[in-house]
Image (tube, rainbow, N blue to C red; front, side, top):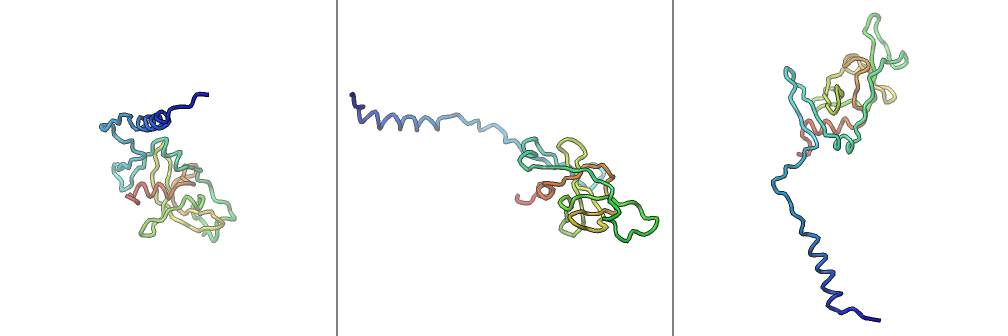
Length: 154
């Protein structure tokens, strides 16, 4: 049986390891942004736009705003407007304590909309005012969108 030369067993692995780091790097390539924040004309609100990969990594999920059930509404005065409901996870408080929910008007666009909370019960937020029934709100990942919008972590 032929025994390999000690030089081969030493030089070959070192050569292979040395070649693994020889790939060219394009220093002019621009990094792909996972998101961008855009001003909305005529509003103090902003739009968060995610790229498809970021939406998937953040696991953003939405649910439609629905009418509140009679069991969820407490002490509604006669003639009061009907109430709507969202999951508690969709509710965001800003640093001043104002309440919001992120809507998903289209595609990968998310907009923080003000909401007025009537009550919170069993992980359901009953709204006295806010977006209309059927509007998609972010039910998973709203806090992450708030961080993107406000620049938390930058």
